[in-house]
Length: 291
Image 1: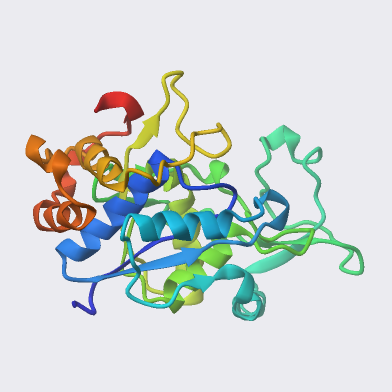
Image 2: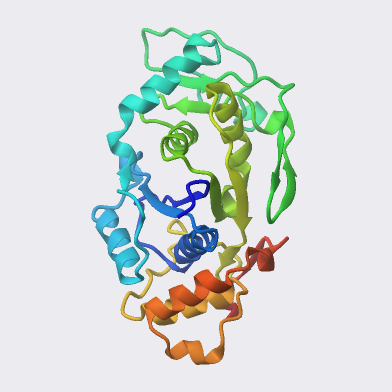
């Protein structure tokens, strides 16, 4: 295996895997294996109020049925609070994080974007925000979507620890990507607007910045992306080979028709050998029922 390529699949346990989840898992898996790298799994269980009881087991069962086995031990974000606290303290020490008690109502005039430091009584419950510097570069080159950029007023001082003391997605993700030595991130384009925030934190903490490729999202017939929030149907684990063949087709890898009768193992081997991520170049979305 190549130590220079480490990819990952990082689901949150808000529900079981659906077809869109399988696409992200397979795209990251195939890209890692095509480059003779490692593929890791991380469970992003940081938000108990949004988590579905039993979802972690359902996710891991679905991965096992589809023979998507990680190359290292699975890590759980719920067990890594000390690492996130250490990173937050580093940012505080560098004067790159500040406490904030601003409410959504107070930020409504700026569409929820916080700009500039504010007064805060730290004896009361408060969030921590990353101190955004407007003159920082706000773009990155994505392998599939090209140059992606956002204006400063769409980013602002984003939350890194919530007022309810739960860790924010952005901070936990970059800490864990660094911890797991993630070199390549292959994920859905619905997460692309988080990348610049993650890049800012990576730079501030002295972390390496991974290589990014954001694949298109699969949409339901009503045009909404397949997601747990939109009640996407659970992946049918009784037909894993069929699921993988359909996913390969959706990912524009053009598996031969006779591969529809292949086993899960044969399909995974074929996918690793023939993977061509450039087939998804410039595509932002396509129907889940395309194939």
